[in-house]
Length: 120
Image (cartoon, rainbow, N blue to C red):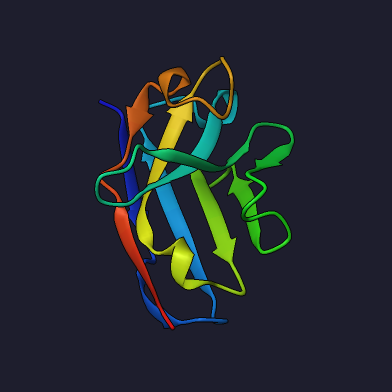
């Protein structure tokens, strides 16, 4: 059974930093593209960043967020710096074994989400 478990969310002031972690089990981690998406109430889930052998970023987070993975620990990270109130969302970890990295339909497995709140 595949499980993705996110951690590291919380409340931070604008300009601050958080690091999200996603621990994966039940899949061949190093074969998968791992990604972070985010969602706010009433909005569709939106691509933030992904990593296979390379990182990919949405323009809105490029230069502020860094995605990385530790295949030995089956864990993917999202380091978020210079946070803005508009980064407030539930952040989801996802795993895929192919497809367009920015598309939710490419991802077979999802975590339960972790709330990130950035106060102004």
